[in-house]
Length: 75
Image 1: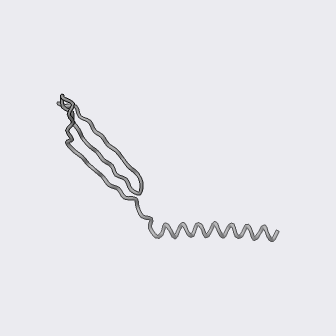
Image 2: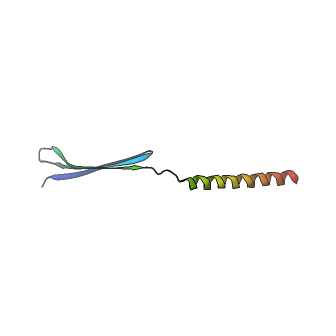
Image 3: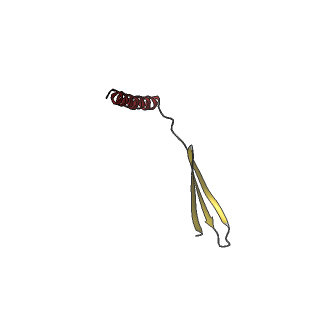
C-alpha cells in the first residue's frame, strides 16, 4: 500500500471554509489526490431581539449615569 497524507486548512473572516484533501504517494514520489471536501460556513446574523436587548441595556446604563450626575450636582 502506498503512503497516504491528509492535509486540511481553515480560513476565518466573515465566514469560514474548511478544506480537506486526501493524497497518496507512490514509490516514485508522485502524489495523487483521491478526495477533496470543502465545507463553507457563514456567520449568523443577529436576531432583532438581540438589538432590542442591547439598546435596552444601553438605555439603562445611560439612565444610571444621568441619575448619578444629577445626584452629584444636587449635593
